[in-house]
Image (cartoon, rainbow, N blue to C red; front, side):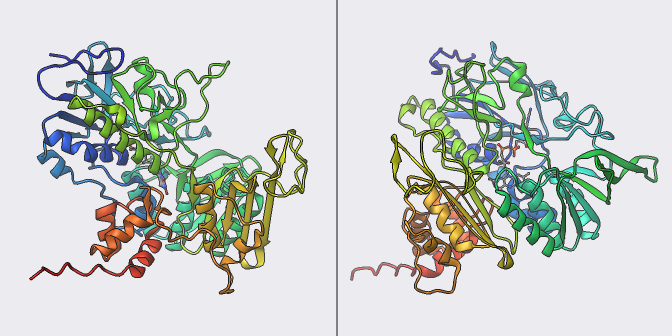
Length: 563
Ligand SMILES: Cc1cc2nc3c(=O)[nH]c(=O)nc-3n(C[C@H](O)[C@H](O)[C@H](O)COP(=O)(O)OP(=O)(O)OC[C@H]3O[C@@H](n4cnc5c(N)ncnc54)[C@H](O)[C@@H]3O)c2cc1C
């Protein structure tokens, strides 16, 4: 018997467990499965997972590290699928959902099997954009075109030609891995954070790399001009060439041994040709929303869900991760557009998976899901995963120190925290030492960071990250922050990076306190701490801090039995 779903979204009683169907077995789907396991094991939930990829779920964040040979395949494991199956989860790999009948509450897979649900969860993630370039015609997927098979999920009418890849999944990584191992010449199109990470890592492993981008500096969405120029300079020093102001127009090919088209060069609008053996497209991602659109769920940039992660359209449907756009119902503007979009980061996706699993688990046993907290939103901080180049930024860093005063009436040069008509003036502090590869910018209002960037200043960057996260006021003398990276032993952090509530692992939201508790209880390696707290299991950029925390924490003495 199918469950009936009331408008309020409560599953009505039907014999047996609540049937939850999860579409997508990426890292966010995997986290959802893991968190829902107790409800499956107790018999309250019957969970079916339909994943288009033939592999077990893996940590996509580390695909770039794997592609350059810096991470072993096992490091990408995020879940023990065999254990999930043993606990009763029906995991079907290599099976794509191609249709949804919401009135009957059934999904259809490309094997033409039907799976009924009481609760349907979209974790379909995002796909890499393929730019519109001559030579790549019909490889671009229309954003609302549905796939008929799992293999076609991200393909346009045509597959990408040989030697052209978008670094998103394990198969892409294998292609890049072969090129890096063979020290080939790699052309990266796009200088966003993922493009730069791939480029820097590949050249560090010995490949010849050139990054083609149309902006002025790399990572233009996250960095200002000064920080971007320093990054370009650091990249060049590490062997990665960047070609700014280069608008790619065409992909040129040669004939391969079987007559197939093989990448030869990228043709730019200014006439230059950039030759290479492999073209890596790094031109952003687009949430996979075509399936949601096909069954008339509200979509915009992602599947529109409210703070409970419930579809705006159907109370039995939810979305998490890279496909989910969380927005308050009715928040569309006069033009019908809804602001924001999916975060495109693992941390928010994992928090959503935790929150939704708790909510559905509570609901399945007739508990009160109202008591389950929402997925907590944290300010997004972007850290470049690169060896030897420290880049971190958060918020809006576009303001210039010499910008005209804002329309609020604020005047330049106002002291921090000084209110003008109730609105504090914005202040911009910049420190640039290009000769030593150091740069920092702080954009504050009322002394609190609205945006920041730090290049080549790891301690300052860490401090600013904490201040940004907490919304703390900066010291009036900003130079204190800048001197954290100096040899001046007298300069101390204002935030106490070892304060119990300081976040260490941004991907999993793990605090100093949880790590030191684990270390005191006997977790003496980063891997052990990762197993018990999940810290360091996302992008891994916090592993150094975890090591430091373990070293600072004495192991608790074992309890002595009372005679
Ligand atoms: C190279 C690289 C580096 C990154 N680095 C970072 C980083 O440092 N920090 C960070 O926070 N984030 C990073 N990210 C982004 C991060 O990987 C994503 O935020 C994360 O993967 C989102 O997880 P997800 O499960 O929502 O979606 P995805 O990982 O996209 O997984 C979705 C899954 O759903 C499956 N699927 C889709 N449609 C269907 C269907 N119809 N039927 C069945 N299955 C379907 C797909 O095959 C896929 O397996 C990086 C991404 C890449 C590619």
